[in-house]
Length: 331
Ligand code: 8YV
Image (tube, rainbow, N blue to C red; front, side, top):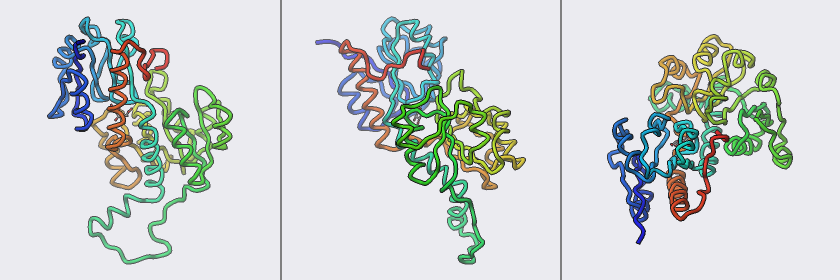
């Protein structure tokens, strides 16, 4: 009988996933869910056949350099692989996989929630009643926000999540615009009645809402730079459920403080898990809605992610190419 691969999983996963991992692999679980320290990660890459990290682990070139002969696969429990130096792994012959597709719909749902929450003052109203605040009853001029119906949505990154956002937003009556490295298929453009903008600058200047849905890569770092954010209309909102560092957070804060942008809905931050205190202030003033990276946080999604990780591991150890292999050139 072939020995089961030693799989080190850096964080606690849903019970169903852990049970399955235990059945199939020599699974080293992290039952108390404490983040692994650097020495623990080094020990893991030295002895494991497979490492299953998450966004909270930095799998950089220095760590990968210390990997043992046995390490064949880094099977990320997550879609974005900005936590992993994929090129360094490839140089050592280590395969990297991710968990695409199973998070698209949940992340797109949360994007819509944020898109509605800020202009429609959702958290402000909910908080007023929850805190037992004064409500004098309905009035024609009270708690007025702005409609999103009929507005222009600009999607930065029309990949799997961006397309799922576009489908929802179209149903909400927004017109769909997008900027992407490549134009999407004509059939998708037709379905969404989407307008492609070759120039991100020009798109930003004309949108009411911008949704960030691209990965974090060296090429997208501060893609929404201060200069670009300044091109936006003062009535416009930014929604980010992708990665914090795609947006120059300091510039975003300053422009909202100065009234040069209407607000933002943010699920991700530049320096997670710390949140800039200025963002907290803006949230307290109801200029923005902030969430602690919850875009894909559904139990169903996490189980699906676990299943993807398992399939990637099993396929590789059965001698085949794992379905969700991430190549350095795609990062
Ligand atoms: C994941 C995410 O939960 O998958 C992603 O890219 O941002 C999250 O929703 C996280 O990455 C887990 O590693």
